Length: 155
Image (cartoon, rainbow, N blue to C red; front, side, top):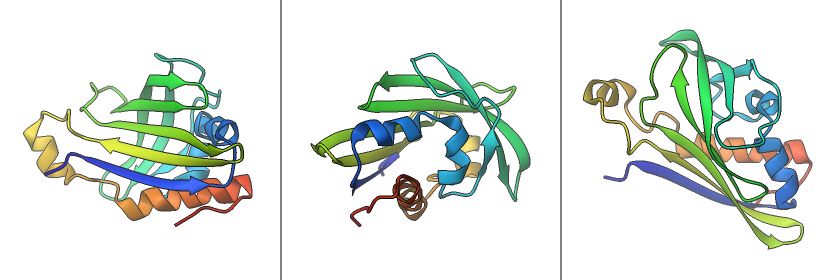
């Protein structure tokens, strides 16, 4: 069984525009297809590996909570990703990352990888029922991103 979900779509926008939106925690709740993100606590754009940003979250089964995210990959206009952990807890082993590949100057292949292969806590694995975010929700995030940029997306 695979332990990651990978979704790819082509967006009619330059990689730099897409990357700028993805690196901006303030936009994440607006773009979120899972509807779990409520707002950024740290609204400053991300610029380097090791940075942390916090997001207010909500899930009906859990209620309100805060996720602290640590950037583990940052390549300007190419790749960005973070390791989330619930405030006050150690990271559980999930990772979110985005890869951007220029198709042309104004078209970008955007790939999101949701990886839970590093989750070792079996009780958490059972309770979480991975993947917690489904492919349709990731596609919805990509559609919202394209709409935010005012451009089409290939389905």
